[in-house]
Image (cartoon, rainbow, N blue to C red; front, side):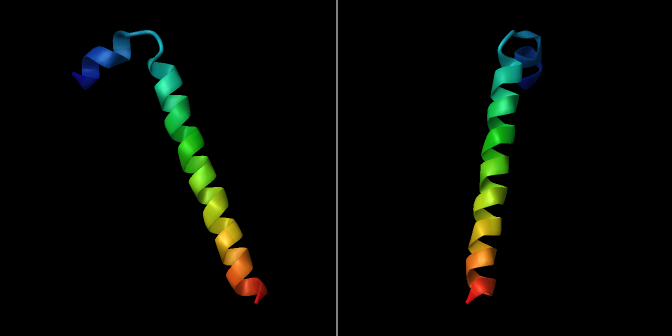
Length: 39
């Protein structure tokens, strides 16, 4: 089923969405560490 999705248009959108989610997760983690270290 996953190999089928690669041929469909719009699969790149899902990949970009996952990348954006990971990026936001990384930013929130960094902000959390800054808060902890700031104290």
